[in-house]
Amino acid sequence: MSDNPYHNDRGNKDRSITKPPAESMGDPVSPSGAATKAEGDNPFLIGRAMTGGYGKGADILHECTISVEPGEIAVIVGPNGAGKSTAMKAVFGMLNLRKGHVLLDGEDITALSPQDRVVKGMGFVPQTSNIFTSMTVEENLEMGAFIRRDDFRQTMEQVYNLFPILRDKRRQPAGELSGGQRQQVAVGRALMTKPKVLMLDEPTAGVSPIVMDELFDRIIEVARTGIPILMVEQNARQALAIADKGFVMVQGRNAFTGTGKELLADPEVRKSFLGG
Image 1 (cartoon, rainbow, N blue to C red):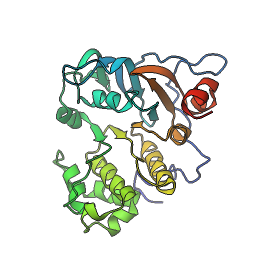
Image 2: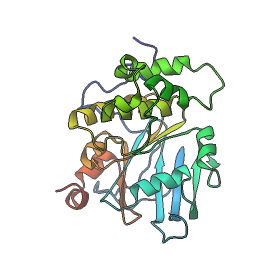
Image 3: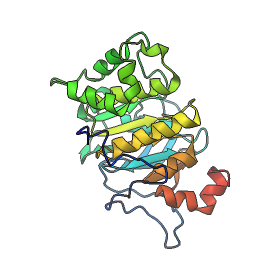
């Protein structure tokens, strides 16, 4: 068995197998099993009661709360324009909050810049413009280690084991790769920082269903090393199928929260957001 923490027997070998939820969750779920409105808690990463927007514009988020624990996959879903990516960017410090706080491992990081949050351990992969197209795959990964002062070769080997195609194409300009391979580069570069939490904005946008399944498998493997993953996804049904916890957003507000299984089974969620 490989000693690579991104590629071991905890990885998802069967699409029907999902990781059991962390014991410390305590999401608000009614006795009937139906998902209920989201509440705050004190997990490893939390954006609590976030209200804000871009610049001096109107608020996009309204008392929105999202969170994730170590080893979890937390997914933010909802209709177009619901504020999903805005919530992710708020947690990463890309817009000023007018109300609310962001805490990482118990530390209030609300006032920190995105750059400082990376140093604190936040890895963020935006939906677009997330690779250096003129650089090789390996140079992209090396750029991900820019905050490191130690030997990062072992981490790069772990990334190559997680995404074997990147090893094969390591000398190739990243701009020549397929969409799915580019996403692997982007995720790999974020992992090079040795993040405490990994944030992915629409990681499967524009890729085929087969590539989407492969990316989700790799995301599960990363989570099983203990790294919390917070993910925005348009492919709601597929994303909730692998999620330990899901947040359904509507018009910048929490509508429902629960485990992925609970949200998939909730009649109102299914009717309103999953096509029945």
